[in-house]
Length: 362
Image (cartoon, rainbow, N blue to C red; front, side):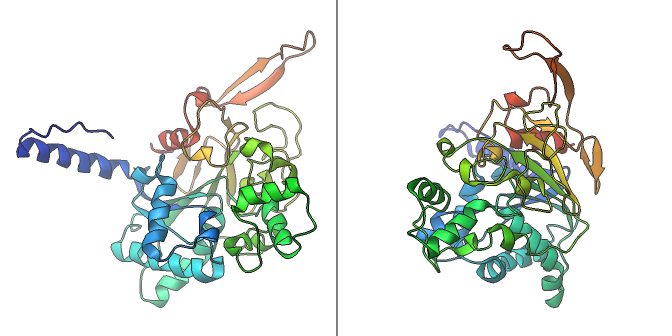
């Protein structure tokens, strides 16, 4: 929101502007009438320059979400990427969960919005937060649902390679080393990999797997950042960092092409190698073949979103994205039947975060 300030305006007029801004900001910081908690993803800068204190962690967390979600949230769970999920990350996260509980921000339920590794951190917190808080005599957070962008809850093969490279630095060629450095921001070394340890596919898939009643709404990208140098090292389709098997919530780390067995990331109706199964209460909502790993957070337009699970209500949250089906013959196909597609009409005119917010914020 932009407000033009005239330094010669009266104090009364300025007070009215500020009051109006506060009211608008408060109304904006909810989704479907519920407070929003943000859980950011991996921040590679923490590996080369660990944050000195909680304030630095919080400042970095605010910057992470500034493009879209920061102004639409009431709280964040910020965490240091040089730590481990069951160690420093859990400790820092609990300090903030305790504040949220004490403030009563989730008395009328909250919605979590996570990105990338924030998906794995969220899963760990959802499994443990009630016990942690009850041990201090505090009420557990009431969570309605979690909106997970490019979720890394199933890990990424880039983390597997980074850890292998840390312990066997002479084994790998320049292309693999370049891909790992794009992912981690450092030359991997034992003892300095932080949460990358937890992002290995086997490690991630053995952390906090108890089923719970909180639906995880998955938003999946398939773009090509970093000039595509990471893609050859990730199984199946991916967004440049996270494989589709992880972002969809698939129960195994096998290479897959899509969250659906009959729909591509770009919306073409055709047979696909989809997930054999999904984790309990995980729902792939939208796929987007052109959006990149970070672009899903509000910085990219021009990419078509494709509905997968749609026209449903999950724990009281209505999921009703507009949808249209159409047929189209590729320019090079001179005869035969047309190809069938499904899309969210007009989704290329906005970014994925804006699309999700405007649709779910009924």
